[in-house]
Length: 438
Image (tube, rainbow, N blue to C red; front, side):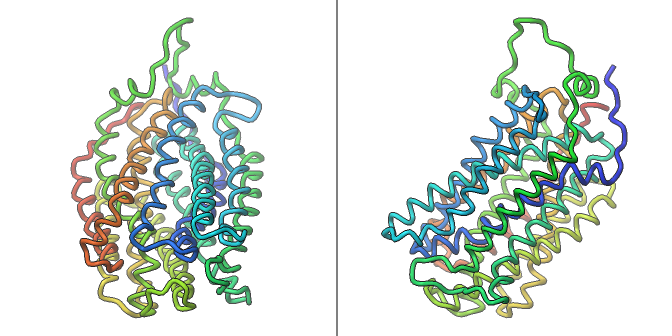
């Protein structure tokens, strides 16, 4: 008989996810500044979305491998934590290299290639460092507390985002230069990456000090895992994918529209806000760099909205109702950017977008982990990452074409993102919640 996981105190749930704070700073710096970095080096707006293919592409490769491998790992460092250590170590190195892509005296094409390779390694390492925290909650938290645990993770994720998004404008405010020679990334961005790397190191140390993973025997007892007969062939990823519960696919449908929307936000907000609020499309101008700083502020406002909404989410009994409501609010936020030319009024838009982001971080994993057993938890969460990565890859591949069809105005891509979120909210209807350990 499967043992029921005991309830855990708030601080134990907090410790399980605290390292996500550091990982998310790295992710936020990437999200808010990749378009800015490559545009500053010299990339054409219609090709910007192609750089955004790398993050989800590396995710769809790395996270299933990490999930499957960690299901079969146990050593003195644990089951999931070794992968955090490797991913974070690589991320720290690359975070110190990427923003310097235009500073090594390379040609524009050479700097682009260097940046592209650095981005590939950064994406790979962030994905490797991020995945363990999603799996640790699935491993160690019972069904009753998973909603709270993933909401804490969402809170820490957005707190980390806040730090990453605000770093460039904060450094600019204290006197760090926000303008650099043509093709070179400003110090305000470069130093932000250095600070993010240092915080990530501290968060990894914290995780290793305060997280105790279940040893194999205890893990098996709490997850109903029976010892497999010698020589029995383990189920591969494709087999498990075919056996995935309907919840996996229906939540995945919602994910398709949600992550396509946010891919367009990350790619086009900088250009959209520079044009509609600052009145410029010149990536070499100080106005464009100031708009880039303000995008960090707007993303931080989104993170604040997400933190607040993450507190509200557990108050709703119905996962589906709060999931759909959050996406509709986010959709309204995106569409409203079309009508706003005041930089401060955009706070309202991005607070609403934060509601959708909070739900996207918490609800899919709460619903999914309730429907699968612990035996293949890591593998399924790795495979589920495909529902995050595939839509981003598709959206990135089509971004330039869609931008041209919409007249070349990047603000139109944010409106399209809002439409996608509303469609996602409608698709929440198709989710059927199940419970593997009920």
